[in-house]
Each structure stands twice: as C-alpha cells, then as structure tokens.
Length: 454
Image 1 (cartoon, rainbow, N blue to C red):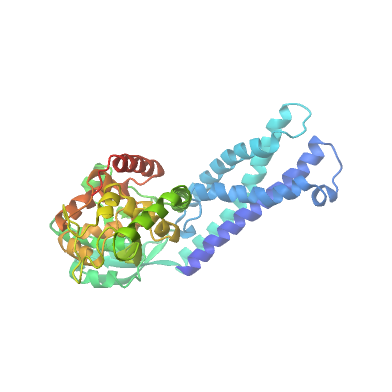
Image 2 (image 1 turned 60 degrees about the vertical axis):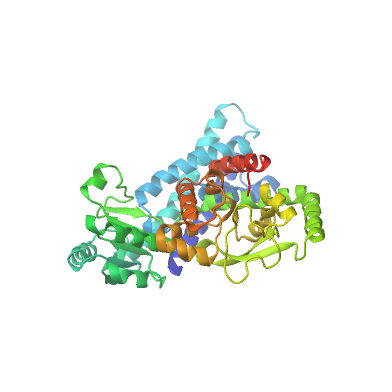
C-alpha cells in the first residue's frame, strides 16, 4: 500500500511538470506570434510575468485537480476515464486561468484571444496526457505482472468462496487483482477484521445470512476496509449495483470513506475558521462565565472527560463545569431531568449550551468537528454496540459539538434514547455536505436562543 501512495505522488509530480512545460511553451509562443519578437532566452529569464506564472500556475492546476478528486489510487484508474477527465479539466481550468491571467494581454485583434485560448488548451492537454498515460501504462504493466494486488479477505461458505476465488484467480483482464490473504466463514471473520491487514473484504451471502452480513459490513467499515458484496438480480434491477469497471464481476461496493480528500480539507478549514472567529468574538463572555463558575461553586472551571472519537480513538473533551465536583463517583451516569448534581450557574449554561463552547479548542486540536455525531464514553458505547452494532458507523468521522441528532432529538438520558438519536447521526453521515452543516448550525443557533438545551 505504501508503494501505491508513492506512485500517486508520481502522478502529482507529472502534473506539475506538465503545467511548467505548458507555461514555458505558451509564453514563448505568445512572445513570438502576438508580440512578433525573435525568440531570446531573456524572454524567460528577465520577465517577471513569466517567473510569476511559473510559480503560481502549477499551484492553480494542483488545486483544480485536487478539487476534482484526481489524486486517487492510480492502480484503480481507467485510462479511458482519465483521458476524458483530462480533456474536461484542461478546458474548464484554462477558462478560469484565461480570465485570471490572459484577459489583459496585449493583442492585435480579438481573434488572438481565441487563438491563445486554443493554443494553451492544446499544449496543456498534450503535455498532461503524455505524463499521465506513461504513469498509467506503468501501473497497468505492474498489474498484469501481479506486482501490485489488493490484500483481500474472502467471506462466505466454502462452495461460494471457491467459485469467486476461481473467477478472481483466473481472470487475465488488465484490472487490479485480489490477493486472497484469508478465506473464512462468517463466524471466523470478525476476529480477522480487527487485525487491520486488509484493504478489501469480499462477502458472498444468502438471504438467510442477512443479519450476519450487516454486522460484518459495519465492522469492516469501522476498520477502514472497503466491502464488496456479490450483487443478485434484484440489486441490479433496482439500481443498487454500480461499478467503475466493465470488467468487475458484479459486486456492490461500499466504501469506508465518507468524504473525498477535497471535502475533508474544506470541512476542516471551515471548522478552524469558524472556531477561531467564535472564540475571538466570545472571549469576553467566556471569561465572565469562567469567573462566575469559580465564584459560585467549588471545583475547577473546566471539566475534562475521556470520550471516543474517530476510528475509536480516545481524547479528552473540554466543557465548562456545570455540576458539583466529582458528580459521578465511580460509575458513569447520564444527566436526568431536575438533576440535583447541577449547580445554579450550571443550569443556565446547560440550558443555552454555553457549557459546550470550550469544545471549540477540541475542534482546533483536531479531535472534533463543529458538526458531527456527539462523542460518547467507552462505557456507553459498549452498551449501545451490544444492542445495535450500527453505532460503529458513527466512528468513521470526527465527533461534533452539534449534530443532526442533537437538533432533531436533543440530549439523551439513557441508552435507548442514545440509539434513537444515533439514527439521525447515521442519516447525517450518509448525506454529509457543507450545506447540511450550515443548516444544522442554523437550527442549533435557533435552539440555543430559545433555551431548549438541558
């Protein structure tokens, strides 16, 4: 897997070189054809516009490719799809670059604009495709010689496993093949999944094994394993069956990754900027709350507690202390209606959810997001998971200060209520977007202003 990541970097480097070569050729063409000058080396070395373009234009193209999710595993790419993607990226990217860089160029007549646009697109597409196709052909050659394979866990009854394994091992098509590291039945699969040594799990199931399959899928996704399930006729007719390759053997793919790299970066930037602004704007108010807590009750101002975050990793969550010191004792407890452990100021800050604001520091640290499922303690997670293993799906993303579950359901006072709230959080994960985050924040602010916290 590490070698495959290095090969993605080759793809990135190739795109950078293509952007640089394109700018050098295009800049020289513009000097000779538009300005009608004889080519000299000084065109390039003494022109600040050329040097600025050489620095910033490759970065512009990198951003374009990153936004369009180009830099994924090259061994799972289709050369035909990449050809089409490259044409689309070159035309759209040049269109934006044209208005940013070339619109104020000195020209003889307006036809030169069309000429310059066509010239840049053609040069860029040619250099881009050369590099990408060389790397993709290199990748396909390694695939054909089985130097790169997907480490796979094969799950099902022996008869079904043998049928699938026969198809996978005998295919001679130019697609990334599977290395079947282990093949087991459903009962023995759970122990292997937690060893984190598989990229994919292929599951062959029958109708009567549906519950076992559901539990297995949840465990795979929680451990970052892509799942492939053999599609039946109903799956194909109902439209569930989608494939990226015409050579695939009829599998439904379920990815453990909820967001694309660009979406992850966008969400993280959104979290950082918003957290920083809120902390700056509310800092006087937060200081006043801290002083009141200190003056009106014995104990620390901030309350820290271990919670479980993304990928089942523990972290310490920060809150303004709203209860008496050592309110729980040895046994974890959830807050109840009219809880006597809550202090006078605690009742106020919980009502308006002010006690949650220190978690903005958790967001800046990277433990949490602004919007995401609420993090719970290990004690309650174990209880919930015994009832519904689906809870593990929430641990594919960072927990949040607010969530769809908090907006639609609110605080939970017991495990059954936690399970009810979980359904909203799973719905959020399946529909994650910045626009949905903004909607949840809007309703959260409305809830806070109305004092509907507990």
